[in-house]
Image 1 (spheres, helix red, strand yellow):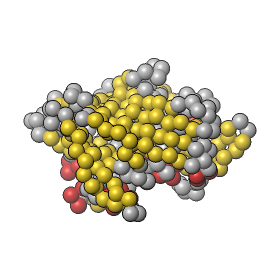
Image 2 (tube, helix red, strand yellow):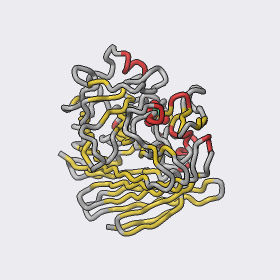
Image 3 (cartoon, helix red, strand yellow):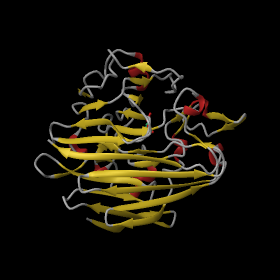
Image 4 (cartoon, protein in one colour):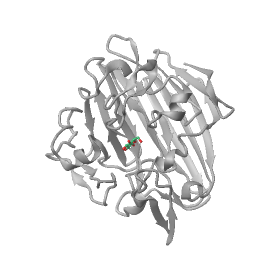
Length: 347
Ligand code: BGC
């Protein structure tokens, strides 16, 4: 096990460091202080060669100026809030409507587009922390966040989140990695097979906002309870897929009880790389990079539509306006904690 620190760039005069953690089997990941962002994951393929399975950028400018949240820690509310508003105890909060002037998406990049502070590290982990001020973007609560990234010897990246607010507020944090299990140069993700342990998903309206109802996946292009290629049904003539130009939906993880459970997996036959995702959270947004538009990323290559997919573990989108969803409303002083793991193997 080893942890190495290097300078990645500078943001408004502040150094942004990169930490690379490597285990005894040679697998490694790197994470930078800007956005507490995973920049690279080198996982072993079926021939034992290490492949960078993250779509993203080589340089800080990419993350600052051109990013679609690649690898970033997103919050205080990841995903969307409908009408960019919610109420707590009868008081309405109006948030920045950064999407089509109507919805709030990823809290307008508040946590992902800033430099986090180094918190601590050891031979197999590094952690970062940041604060936010009450009222920024309309969102209530002075808050403190910590995110810790650990690599185990069985090729698992464990991400542990903690947050606390001095006001009652909603908290929903995620990691927004885009995976391509053939490596970034591997092209489309449509042949990657995935599985999601969910009998239900949350259908969305034209603003990608769920309306309280869960829909059964049974008999639909959303049934990933057994392995299916991402591309098998993505072009099906179905309103849910057309609305979002592909998969961009929250799946309701079966038997959610707050314990760490496997919620999703993906296997790429070319590389043999398998990713298993575990989380303590109730939902996972399966997003197929529908809005990637050719922005230049690593090695000067374009990140085209469907060259990366995300499993964003989370509370359901727009939970504040959907009281039937598992709650992510935290009292002043009540700690938010969650854990998500990415386990890699090859077959
Ligand atoms: C959303 C997508 C969005 C992407 C980048 C995902 O979490 O669901 O609709 O395009 O993030 O912002």
